[in-house]
Amino acid sequence: MRVLDGETLSPPPVWLMRQAGRYLPEYRQTRAKAGSFLDLCYSPEHAVEVTLQPIRRYGFDAAILFSDILVIPDAMKRNVRFTEGHGPEMDPIDEAGISRLDAGGVIDYLKPVFETVRRLRAELPEETTLLGFCGAPWTVATYMIAGHGTPDQAPARLFAYQYPKAFERLLTLLADISAEYLVTQIDAGADAVQIFDSWAGVLGEKEFEAFAVKPVARMIAAIKARRPNARVISFAKGAGYLLKTYRHKTGADAIGLDWSVPLEFAAELQKEGAVQGNLDPMRVVAGSPALEEGIDEILAHLGGGPLIFNLGHGITPQADPENVRLLVERVRRGGN
Image 1 (cartoon, one colour):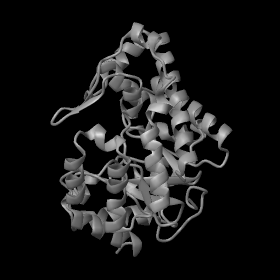
Image 2: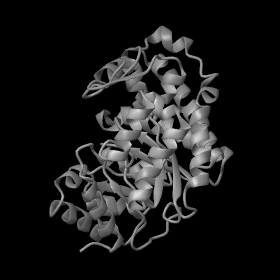
Image 3: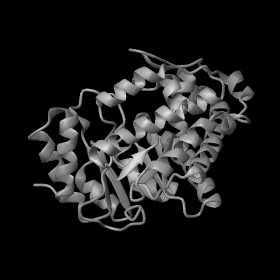
Image 4: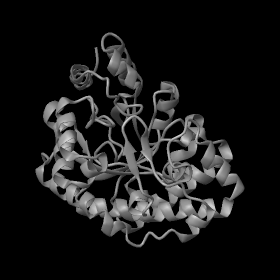
């Protein structure tokens, strides 16, 4: 939380995206007990357990709520399901479907998530930050339009060109309900929240402004209007040079960086406030010496400013838990 306010700490705090996940044997055991993936997300008992597992094992400085970015469309009755080997799927939405969308019951539907947040804040050590999160409107919209993930989100990009008014309505609706969702997480006990725009990198300059910047700015303004002390991290993966004005235009307190962001550019972005990232997750899979080299380089370039050490995207299932332990230890001793 101090880093989110612009303070430089040495060593920097550390947590990892997807730190609760399939690379941990204890996660796989809990996942098997829970049933489906959505059952795991909506069971406070199991969601609390898997959120706490990496905290117990590694003592990360932050725990992130275990859930999924697609609980919002699930709550909007889009028939979300997770199929092993296929990833998320849902009923694709068209122009007429967007006009019929009703977000009225979403917050009530997601009560189990807020109960998970309440229990986590009660069970976590006081010094461990609890992060809530949601997907950014653009990224969530890409799944709603296509009905599944695609390599370059061509269905959503095409839809936005063909039906601009309907697409703008969808983004606005998602922005408003997602802001409400994050405010409710904060009220339940989240110390800060992160917005994941995992597919921002497929957008051109004008589209990035309209589909990634504008809806996230709307969300953050709504959150801060209601909870002025709220702290927001926004992660626009793949945005590259467009990150130059992203913090200023969105109002984010910290910006997440993927591993493709050059560290000299990251240091420029850091002059305006906290940055988070940006180790390549494949270095965690590779282990030594690639892991140490990547950590040391980030600390050398960004350790002199407000930094939250993290990966440039989520940890992958094939990562060795021992390599994660080495990562935490090396960050905490300042590299080398």
